Figure 1: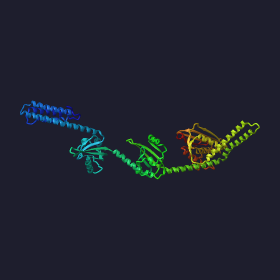
Figure 2: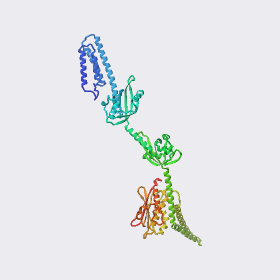
Figure 3: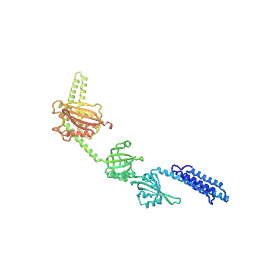
Figure 4: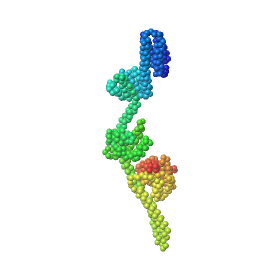
Length: 593
């Protein structure tokens, strides 16, 4: 016989079964009763079923039949032989029938045990209860979740042991269960340690052969953390409803699944109208990037910030400051949280401010050019006078008895160069006088410096100032407005010359350009003048602050605004032993072009 496994009883039961079988054999063989004693072998089969598997039970049954037959032949005849034969056959038949029923019961038990083992493997809680709600089965998942062992839970009323809180009266739930055979909902259970859990519960009604309800199978899935997360999301959603920003959640490739009150107020579309629509189609989005590039950036970085143009319900176009955050769901969905803030009025105000600054800068340039009238006249007069001299020289060479064409050609060539030089000076002056909207483009800063040195050369000579340059070769270009940058350099050179007007001794103006860290370049204009005003060095960039007798106090203020609008910085420092140096940095933007 094969033991049933590690949970089989001790050897007492097999020994008792063997002894009982021997006793039945002796009683059947050597005693004379009016009953069919071999029928008692049925008890042997039933006892063997407690500690034997299928094969063992079959062997015990065959052994009992064999003992019955052996006893029939060994026992002395005490009555009609037919009667003894009939009793023996009846006993064999009963033993066989009992064995069949035992084996069938064992098969059912094996199936039930396998099913129970499978139920023990699941993390969900599974238990069954009778129609009186007393627990009849309690799986390992239930032990782990609620804290009661199987032995502690069996026989207890489930709703009492777990203090169940139902979403509806229990009578209504039971009525639905009896009517439909199933019920689903959320329950609140109290565990052994006193803490509460929220479970998604499913009840299934079990019926017997006569279709009468006899048990309820209940499976529960712990959703406590999910409910907490949902509550947190609900609170966050309530907060999102309070913000004035438009908050939209859409699923790739753009279907809207959330539309807050701020979005309703900004765009004019109700939540019902927006949800399910494609966001870009609904708002007719004008994006600074192609769709494929934008989606690739969002996938790679997980976030995108920028400005978008949207069309609201009444047809107006608005500019929004937008932030997109990619959210990857566990189920593989890709959601995008989009936050938009209307900056239309701010941008309009910024545009008006930029125009006002440009107008003010133009006034400052005109004022500065007015102060330079005498120097500019001298600067223009030089090449014109030289051109006139060369023209007269050319005429003399041509009117000789034997015209010297080579000399005349050289004089004409010098005349052309002088005229070109005068035209360039006039062109630069006209450019500085020109009024218009700032235009950004790639600018060679070294070229701007050289142009301003040429333009202000007469002013430097007038005040006995020597100008030296140290300009880095292959200096990266910057993205900026050429006229505005010319104005900054002109202001700094003019300030340096002005600072040295009343100084005895060497008057030197040194201009340098060189690359700096973080993809920037730095320009410095250094003089040997009076230096920064004592006690007021921190005010020199304030509007209307000036140390000049007839100054407007706008030059450095405007210069700093221009530099900062280009993403740079302008500051000053005293030199030793005298003079001051003005520094400005500008970002190089070649890669952005």
